[in-house]
Length: 244
Image (cartoon, rainbow, N blue to C red):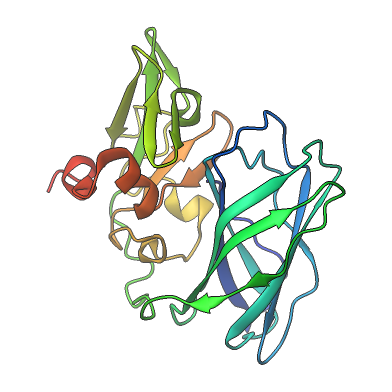
């Protein structure tokens, strides 16, 4: 998962969050530049270049795009890779949330072949709209980080989730803190959520509206969504992370 990236300017723009979960197959290679476009009943986007990420096996990347108008009900989309060293890249799922009204859509199993062409993204509306009415009410940011052999390490360096099974480096620990002085300094009151995801309600990622969760890859911060937290800590992840 990664930090927010916003395209475009203007006062009447519509923002969408995106999340891409890469399949568990390990390639050991990066995806190269990735481009995403969205097609709704009202409008479509041009290809938008996503922030450069590894899109490593079994991980979630996330960000934000900003477009000039509401796209309406999402129908399809396209994904393309460029300069990829991989022979294959499969996204288990792609989720898009309209941050104006909370509508969300999910597409399953998008395959990209050698050369960068990918199968058509076919979106379906998922669940009821997210209630985003409390946006901007962040009180405290939590951070997940790792510790191994006495040193601070990024979460992804010690933790992988394959086929729903958590794999933790022997001797390593996954820690959570709401203190800026711990981890990579993402947590605290209010922490760095607004710096990375300005104006975005954490509810869009299944988190409490006033308690977002971040992690770092050592250079940048990214949101840790509820699905990922449940894979790490189980169904009662809120009790582990928030302490309630």
